Length: 256
Length: 213
View (tube, rainbow over the protein chains, first blue to last red):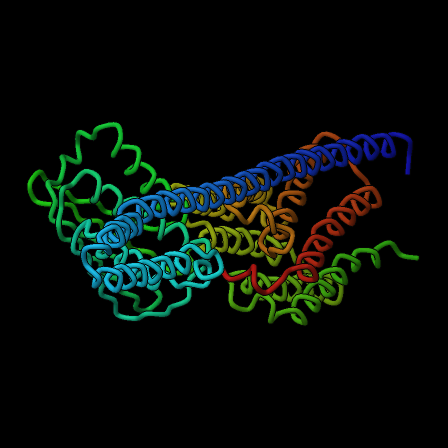
């Protein structure tokens, strides 16, 4: 090989080697950067999800405390007041001691069911349908409105966190119904088939215009929608003034 | 030792890649990457034919390689067409194929049949480079970027990108600088090592669950 040949070989070889090295470095850098970004995004999403779960848990607990306070005041408090009056009348009416004893017994019954309801162990072992059932019973007992639940299948397995979020979404809807809609009938239907969960809840209240929301129920609705996005569920809300409100929730198992 | 023997090394690398590809076939048999294995064996067959014609019969074997240049690029276009789903990419591939066929036809008619058809090669190589970039773009914009090293198609694209990134300047530069056989051989050997090295890594590393498409 003469000197000129070696020279041109070296030039060409190093040029090509340089080009390839450059390509490789650029390729590696781009892929690594993209990979890191994606990992970070996934981590963020996971954190958001976890935060939302915690927030949902807190909200459910708060709701439970509020319910206890109502039950104590409206239900057990009333019964105790009644038995107090009955005992005060005991001097005039010997039967009223017996009546007071019955009232206190009834009161104990209510206390027991309340304490069972708020025991965290019971609550976390409940399936979605059972939890909804208890909620409906409570509405009926407190005489807020006439609530009924129908379902195609009582026990289906969903991720605990997803169940929690769905429950909270429905609870938010119920709270809206009881507080604002002036409805006297609430119907809930749970249908689980082929890994697809469909829940329909409707009331016969005054309804509202879905276009213009007032601030208070607006936040509740926004919460419902945000949570639906979080677990990958589809939520439709129909309402018209004077025609009640319907909520349709569709969730496909394992979409997350 | 006659340096012509060294020209068989790329052939051996190719054989090695094809054999490893065959052994690991079941890892990617459900994806479009399987056509790549057929293509490797086809390449091997062509090179053997070229060598047999060239060395044993001492006949003109450029027609074998020129035919291979055309079919190989057509295969790459077809393969990228099958894995790139985006409409705009597919349209581009159709245009590329049409332009490439025109250039190839021109070369067949007007260029000397007793040398490599460099226009055909340069056109095809540049288009393949663009297609590898399309493929990387696709990978980068999907969640697959996390498991990319287990995807055979990623390694094939890397191999093609590096190989043609080196081959295009080589073709241009050899026009200006006269390279002797040994120099040319060293460069070609290195390029083949990169090309088949990437294929072999891909075949060995790929995992079945990531080659479904």
